[in-house]
Amino acid sequence: MSTHQEYSFFDAVLASFDKAAKFTAWDPGILEQIKQCNSVYRMHFPVKIGDKIEVIKAYRVQHSHHKTPCKGGIRFATTVNLDEVMALAALMTYKCAIVNVPFGGAKGGINIDPKKYTPYELEKITRRYTHELIKKNFIGPGTDVPAPDYGTGEREMSWILDTYTSMKPGEIDALGCVTGKPVTQGGVRGRREATGLGVFYGIREICSMPDMMEKAGLSKGIKGKRVIVQGLGNVGYHAAKFFREGGATVIALAELEGAIFNPGGLNEEEVFQHRKKEGTILNFPGATNILHSPDVLELDCDILIPAALENVINGENAPRIKAKIIGEAANGPLTPEADEIFIKKGILVVPDMYLNAGGVTVSYFEWLKNLSHVRYGRMEKRFTENQNSIILTQIEDLTGKEVKAKEREIIMHGPDEADLVYSGLEETMIGATREITEVWKSNPDIPDMRTAAYVVAINKVGTSYAELGIFP
Image (cartoon, rainbow, N blue to C red; front, side, top):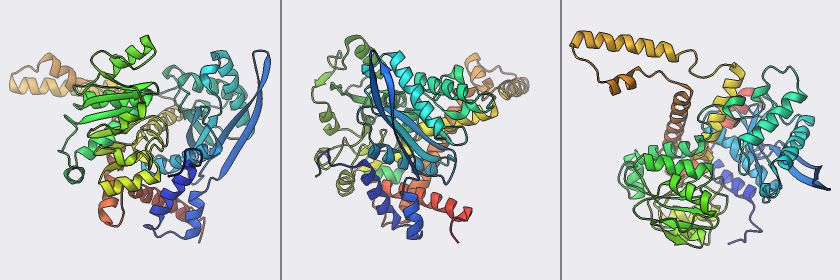
């Protein structure tokens, strides 16, 4: 087992790619082209912080241009380095291909600890980074569209948007230069919870498949399943929320400072408020403390959701994992060594490269909204409600019975923006899950679901190159 310092995230992605490539029929040259990062931009820029000048190190990587624009988040963290950004950009290419979102993969990052800066200083850094991207044509609604990632959110996306629009006056589609914006700045309702909701939809679909559940040694359905979520950030919080609302029992939640366990179930909102008030997840009423946070991964459960950072389950701790299903809500939480161990143990790993694609799927909906310049539901909501009202009245007249007020409200409801976004995300995740499992079932030599997902992605990207005439 390699140490963390020697671990290369990009090499891990390449290893998974190579494992899947042998189940495809593409020319080795095309496979090599699909693997490599097309454009890598490494930058240093000075920013005045207090009385001193700090030189900020940052990156933007465009992995593939088989479809444009490129798409991928920007993270602010001290762990940001070129290897990580390249790996995440590659995963974005495969992720977009699997869920049929017409983008090439990209990723960005700034090597800072955002907690050490004031909002004003963070704004200066973000705006300067955006300037650098504009100078090299690494941002634009038809070129490269960033989004939030670890350490960033709606606030930073607003700063990026404002910087871009001030530098590109009169560009009619400028709102589409970045996604994950506040709704008031052209964002879309449902984007904040999209990744966590997508994780839930994907796992729920897996749990609805009798053969997959038999393979995992579990009963069909999500109801009653014991779930552990590592990470109570945006993705982990919403994944826990939707699992609980879907009838599962969230028995443990973990954060950097430790974890809490309650076999009777935890409410993520109550835990979140406790952490906000006390500054720690620990000592939550009715729960047992687990002081060493990684230990929570090894507890007995049905579904384990790592929703924090990469490389948390590796060759060292994988043999002790007891979960039946692992749903990768984070990017790259498992190493290739862990994958091999889980194949032997019969643990079903639902891979990150499509399971956490809820964010980019809803970002795609936001981008389309920005290009169309109209809110989802605005054109059809009242029409649908009026039609439903007419149908209800006809039914009541024919039967002589009145529909109860609650049922009337449900039947008459016309879709608003969030309804349409949720519906589009659900369709996307169900379709991707079925496509991957069908490829897996059709070839008994494919060892795991991750490899099947890579096969789907490679075939789609390869087809793009073939149809575009990149090679004879």
